[in-house]
Image (tube, rainbow, N blue to C red; front, side):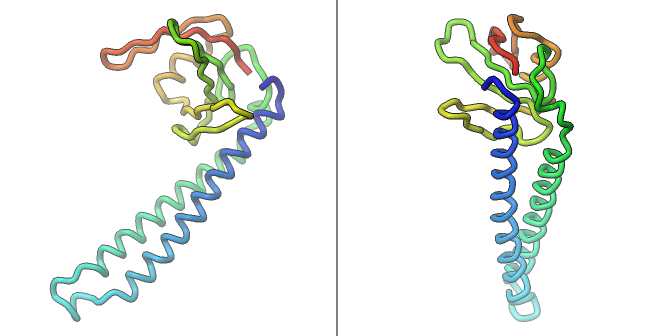
Amino acid sequence: MEDVMNKSKLLQQLMNTFEEKASATNKSFKRAQKDAIEAPGRMESRYDSTKQESSYLADSYNRRSFEIDQAIKALESLPESTLQDTNVIEIGSVVRLKESGQTEDEWYIILPVGGGETLNDNSTEIFVISPHSPLADCLLEKRKGDSIKLSLDRNSRQLEILEVL
C-alpha cells in the first residue's frame, strides 16, 4: 500500500466494477425495453399493466445507466495529484484506522463516487467512502496519528489514524 501504483490499481478496480454494472444495466434496459414494446397494451387487455410496468422498468434502468456513466467519467477526470501520497487526508487518500478496543485495522479510500463499494489489495479489504459521508467528514484534513470521534445517532467510535497514503 505504499506507492502511487496501488492507488491506480484501486481506481482501476473500481472502474472495472462500474463497467461491469454498466454492462449488466444496459442488458437489463434492452430486455425491459423489448418487453415494453412486445407487451399487450390496454387496448388488448383492460387490466394488463405489463406494458406500462415494463416501460417504467426500462426508464429506471436507463437512468441507472446514466448514473454509472457519470461515475466512470468522474473517476476518469480525477487529477493525477489524487494518486499521490500526502500527509493530510483529502479526496483520493487511502486511510488505515484502528478503533479503540479492536484488534483489526480498517482501510478506507475517499473518492467522489463509489461509496459503499469494497476493493481489495492483496488480502486487504478497502472500503470506498464518499467525501460527504460522516466518516470522511471527520477524516478530511486530519493527519497520521490524529484521533477522531465518529458519532452516529447514539453510537460513537473512537478511531486512530494509523496511516495516510
